[in-house]
Image (cartoon, rainbow, N blue to C red; front, side):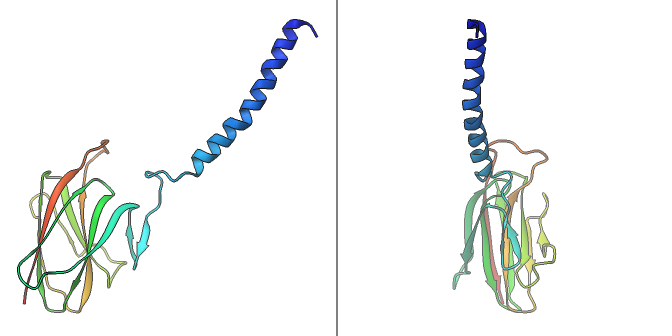
Length: 162
């Protein structure tokens, strides 16, 4: 072969060696879980995002329960609280952003919508269950479009009456 052809042939040979390496790298990267594509997990019928951490909490014998945290869409702590039948429970949300809202779900009816969902004006839930149950309290940051690194601090105050 003339020298020009040998150079071209060597280039093809090199790219043929690189192509399987690139293909293997691309396949390996595709196999790594990515937060935006990761599926949620089901806990007793209620779906949690992969970035959410479920924490078991209980009302203290006296005084309110204070829970402080940070949330960003699909990331942060969510709380599981046991509630007695006939017990009136008040959950108040205070946050550094008006876009932090809370939803309360009942584990006894996981297929139902939230039993309470706050809005920018009403961030206090006062609920009385008819039967012993457990609630999932989910503070979340609601934005029209995702923004990198944006999150907000919140405080939940949970108090019980009889």
